[in-house]
Amino acid sequence: MICKSYEKNFNFYNNLINIETNDLNVLNQITYIYREYIDESGLKPIYYVKIENNGNNKYLLSELIDNNNIKITHGKSKKMMKKWTDKVTFLPPITVPFFQKQFSFFHGCAIRIKNKTVVILGPSKSGKTTLIMELMDLKCKLISDDLVVINNIDGSILPFKKPIGIRNTNKFLFEKRIQRLLIDKDNSPPFFSLANGLQTALIHITDVNDWSFFEKASYIDEIYFISDNFKDVDSPEDFFKLFLKQACISMDIVNTLMKIYLQLKKTPAKINVRDLNDVLKVLDI
Image 1 (cartoon, rainbow, N blue to C red):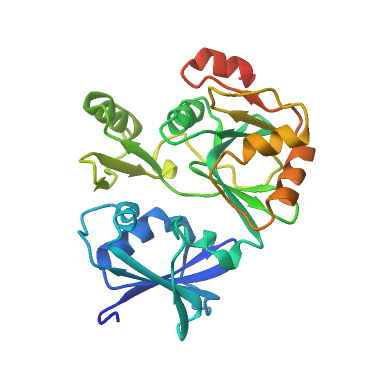
Image 2 (cartoon, rainbow, N blue to C red; image 1 turned 180 degrees about the vertical axis):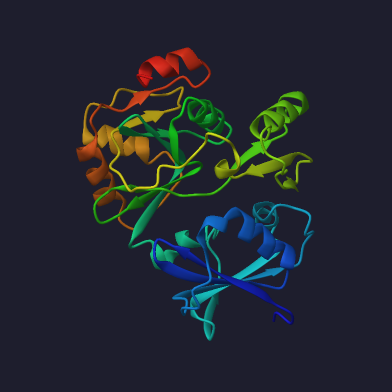
């Protein structure tokens, strides 16, 4: 039972969610990460998530979850809460099963280049975020980093506003990159400890000069995969097989992927994120 609690409401795509926790640090983390979705309308939430932290509050919340230091309960009312048992994280809160009839979620990033929407899929630490930052420096607009949100009704992609995370795997490059991003700002991003001894800085792109979000829903024009085992996509079946190798959360994956596939303006292809010149050529920038 939570004795002392802190709470805040968030509005994701017109879905009002209440977050309650016994740890103010946890709520501050969530509030910072999802600050674009803070709701102060006073309207009644349609879903509730309660977080009880029994771990080291210096860690990033996702690390606490991975280390089983967090107890989560959730439900449509505070009187009808059940324990979170899924292996995947409950973050962001819009990904909980209650909302999966409306939305599907994929591990990847999306960016608006000129008048087209491009999605890039690949495993963690494959270079997606680094590429996204390079493209934003070229005036491309971010749609989402790390999580691709799809409207199941029409297959459109929705902007998802959260900070990008930069790990200090290389201290020199890490500090140089942070300084460059915030050179025109007098603020410093929060740093969170990871269980492996590293740190990550969470930077909202609206805190960086000349970076911005593409604010509208759009249809996906092009998809690129970061994969050493990439095979040509010659049919919807090939597309589904390749797409399903990515981490995803969806209750209607086949219909959702078919809607995406039929909207594409170009055959999905492999992209080499380690060669920026090649990327710019492929993306026609």
